[in-house]
Image (tube, rainbow, N blue to C red; front, side, top):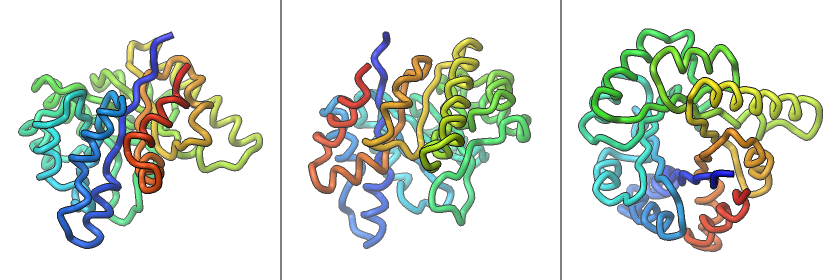
Length: 240
């Protein structure tokens, strides 16, 4: 079975920096340390309100990342222009609301077909791979194929937040089915949101998933154990 790839999201290194308006800690350094520890991708979310990652971070990461740079962003004209200028390896289009603490739920691709298709077309023409962050819903998987994206990232946050019981098992079944349908449709399948050291193994067991994007849990563990160990500990749990 193919080795599961890890994308490390370093947004919350920038969150700590922005809390005091300093120049440290630097998410660019965190990204380099993640790669040294074995990360396959660096993921950052450049939000419209710039609450954590800044334009400066994205441009420096484009120059320094040795693996792949995945830029999460809203499907707006401003963000598409930034991506076309920076040219990350991959763009993940996500829903975004100013008042949310973090991304809440997946992108409604079926409901926003026209503008997401246009953003996907513009990015693809520039040689940038496009991923859509969606809930594990068959209609959203089908819409992802229709707009021309080649990657889907399944939102695992709902499953992560549910207590043990029937609803949690049903949500895992939804994730498993969506991953299978996406893979059969020719999409590369990633997953992320809310994953941590105590729940990741159940998602690792879904064989169609080839990549996980994890940030908050890794940054939190790094506070006590250092970035390289935090990444290596997660990679060990992801081993199939």
